[in-house]
Length: 217
Image (cartoon, rainbow, N blue to C red; front, side, top):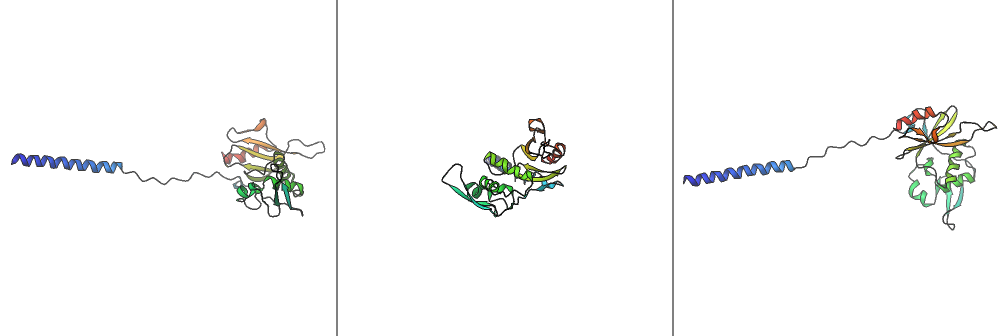
């Protein structure tokens, strides 16, 4: 009788400790609640700097509605309305309508060509025309980087702020005037990661521009 009781006690003890072990294992295996993650910090926009503003594009002229033929498909042509800043091409319809009226990123290559053909930039500063002419020469629409405007030493400067890329484009007047005293305009490139100007030299006001770019690092 005593032996039977001992056997029962031993079995009960083994079962008791086994149940405790199982409970502990279940607690250890229970996944921890994920801690809320903080959103990644958003890069500062250049227009958060005093003296720098977002570039808003306004065109002038009377002949602002036209059609532009496709360069790839000679049988296709697209309706461009510069007063509404719209085009019927796939590039505009599919990728550029998200940008607001006045945002240069709305301008596909057909709108760029139409603006130049219609002299819609005749009353615009020379640096604005240079941006359009540069895009036309490359056969592209205006850059998809946000464009910002500032003034250095009395001259307007356009700066592109890339969302993911490393290179900033700066559109401004050249260092040296022409023989007649006027200035040509040029595109300069600056690498954020390498902190250097392309080809080893920058535009007029390069030191001021470096300070502006420091907010993007």
